[in-house]
Length: 426
Image (cartoon, rainbow, N blue to C red; front, top):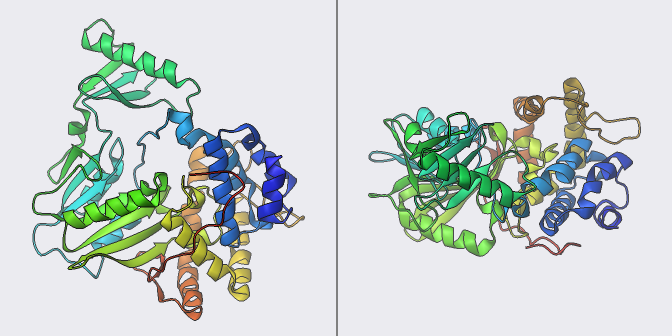
């Protein structure tokens, strides 16, 4: 069985029965879900996160959530969904960045911002003197809400761009047909208000004095006069390295001299962050900084391991840096002891008498689960673990520091490729 093979290859046969039970759903999962899980396990092994530190919550996220978020669960795509507060740390990073101060009207582009464009709205409020532009290829001409509040976005020619009807939709064809029929009936006036609602040009309702929104994507959008910062978060994790190289070339053509390109991934309230910061120079984009949030040193989230390709640079860099830090026995023991205590205080993923981490209490609300990692990250940084982790990296020969938003930062180095997996991935 694939579970036995994963357990043997990546965890020396030591996974707990509870973790194996949570992963059991992967046995019959789609190939891309199995490939994602296989990739996550290889990244965990590189990061020196072993079987005893593989929490039941993380296992549940991989076994339950991964099959529901891969492209095969959404007709080959992933809905452009985001959340308020997701990029707060990145906004603060830009506001306090010491390398680049705009010399004229500052322009910030949030590329692949998602819909509703909550992160771009946050940025416009955090940087009120900047002109902020949210860009996404999925912005539609029509937005249709059904009676339950689920929505779908359509182009002007009534082509369905995406729909959002929950975390998982087992019958995509039926849902797509239902939304198309609802759009037709709303446009011709035959649908009642109880059946649904139609919003024309929906992005306009989110614009403000310093915020505009535009449809576009990498290579399909430009800014008159150039941009000072381009943020492209939670995009590259769905694409391979050649796509990334094309994106960097495009970003270099859009940025002003000295401008920044910030790319990577994170989750709610900027946890599970791992990102690279490039700067525009006369010779093109130069990688100046790679950074990650301190709770990545032993995360309880799926997010630090999530990517659809083996060559995702931020995931590789994160796992390699974390593995270097966790190779320091003194630091690892001190960090893990404190992490265990914090988890016990929160009443989640507590370590049992058998030495394994547990899961979340049954029935724990989703909003409480989402708030765990931000608490862990704040406490760990406040207690000096981000600075201490940077010191471990320096002792290992890296140029590392705690950056001004509390993340472990280092001069970027090219991580080694991920070893081949048991499941054929992309």
